[in-house]
Image (cartoon, rainbow, N blue to C red; front, side, top):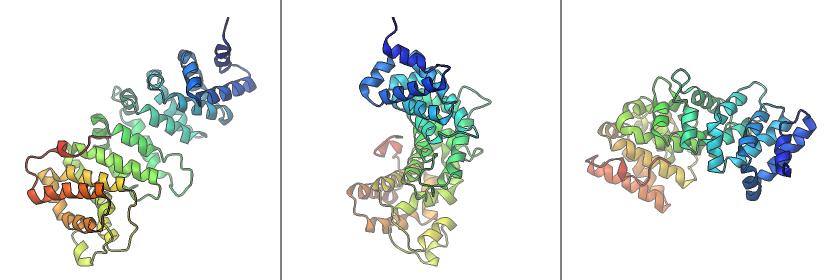
Length: 338
């Protein structure tokens, strides 16, 4: 005889809209607790495909279905099963339907699924030569087109997806591919008013800089966006004269020549300095950094800095500037892609 939970899961596929709606709301509520999620996990082979199908329904059903999947995807075993059954493709297909009403939830589901290596591979579409990179290109385009002026921008969390995929070499190479131009688009969001977007851009850029040894040329090709994104967070309060900014990229020089808001979160400043370190440890990167007056900017920023961890990051870069690139490599930074 079927248990109550088995019957509930069966109702997710009911032909009756009211029954289906009631069932998915109960399932959603169950996933809000650890015990409930654990109980449902025993029926994963049924409940996950059923919830996946409900993503394509009207909002009154698709919304609780998406919320349930987000909660269940916090369990890495269930998340792996979702990836295996093609949940990333399903989420992307629904996300880009013209009448999609659960965009934010689908993006949050993708954030959770790309915590897994298999999820990253699925989103990058590595195993499909013809479609490779299509999903990522769509997400970057949405991230850059949507306005962060709205309080509830559904694509804010794309920044977290970009951080996740840039933890893997294949993801970094895709973002750095000059023909795709994805990192260039992403960097244009670095001055967003959304902390979530800023965090996504900063973390993605830092991870991409771990490819500096092999991809430095592609990083320097977008210098007009790269140096503002790296130097403005750590430039301090000083307002620079026209003479001092004359050799800088226009966007960087313009921003430094006026009064500006400081970047409050020390994590942004640390990540910017770690990114700079990874670039200037390469000889060509060091030359490029000097060419934009980078050392002087950092010196002025260091004088305004009060956070001990950020000061330590300044000092690590300063030591490299004083002693030259030498034989140090990326391993001397404090972290790995994260």
